Amino acid sequence: MPTLIEATLKQEEVKEKIQSLVEDVIRPNADRLDREGEFPSENLAVLGKAGWNSIFLPKQLGGLELDYQSFGVVVQEIAKACPSTALVYSMNVGATIIIYKYGNEDQWHRWLKPLRNGKFGTIATSERASGGQYWISHSQAEYKDDGYVLNLEKAFVTSSGHADFYVLQTRSPHAEKLSDLTYFIVDGKQDGIETGVWDALGVRGNHSSPIRFNDIYVDRRDRIGEEGTGKSIIENSNVYIFGLAAAWTGTAIGIYNEVLAYARKSLANYQVIRNQLASAKIIIDSLSAWQKDIASQLEEWAQTDTPLPPNLRTLIIEFKVHASESANQVAQIAMDVAGGYGYKKGILERLYRDARAGIVMGPSNNLARELIGKEIVGIDTALWPENN
Image (tube, rainbow, N blue to C red; front, side):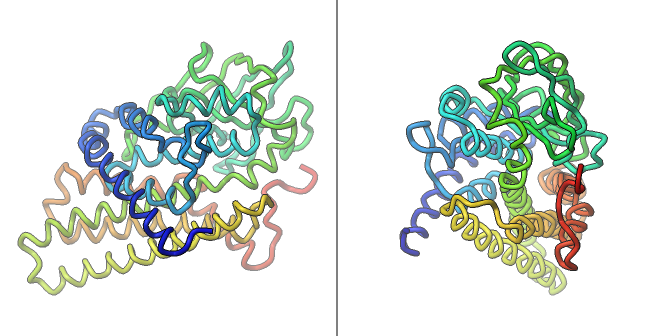
């Protein structure tokens, strides 16, 4: 285990490297991506070639072999400039974790090694009939030849139409229960994949549109794990939600930095302005501290090769709720402080709209509170109804 000093030095090095990339590439692209609703392809390509898309992977697969603290730092720095890119990036990392942890060596080399050349993936889970419960799939795969055929639609898929591959969950061909799920890797460039239009209030670059898989054949070699193991994968791989929370933490910091720079020019002498800035700073510091604590717990868990503890899973969801709502609090403070400057089209206005997405992004905060509340009062928190 690294000493505290070694760990701190590593985090500073990670932060310095990703900040350089953000300032050179990601920040200059951010307003254009929002204005034109353009997918951040250039950003993802640069992140991939620098190794960030492979942040958890071993060096033999082109990875950086970094930890959750580093992941949190990277997402946060990206989100300060462009929340759309941060969300796309987080979902890519989530997809790579699933393939690396539950896939096989053949899949690693075919799908993960190309990440270093700018390829990237995403996760496709939620369905319209599930009402935001992304862990429930009503769709079902069918057998065909030496593999499977998929005819299904996913409701909101980040990077829809742009990802090189989709890590997708659906019910197993023989499934009788909702919990009998299987994961597949779907080549994102094959015929039969239809994507909807993404024209949203905020995070306009992340393209989280519906996606339809029409008669998509998946070879048996691209099934992740055995049939029916999807339940375990869902229960143990939703740590990508930590990345989403870090994205909203970074968004809050980005908003704060922008409004602070504006306030220092002509508003710093007003007590009410200083008080509002202080309120935003307190919120951000609490988020950053909580993020570091959860990252430390995830690192300890990652060394155990055991299922993700329910209390840690709940803690990650709590952090997502708090981070997304805190980003909105800071955005509102920024609008009050900046007045007309914040209201007109520009960086603050863009980040204000982006921040709204965190509240509804799965699990939505209302649904997340229900999961958290059940655990608090001792009600069964099983994601799937008994015998279903």
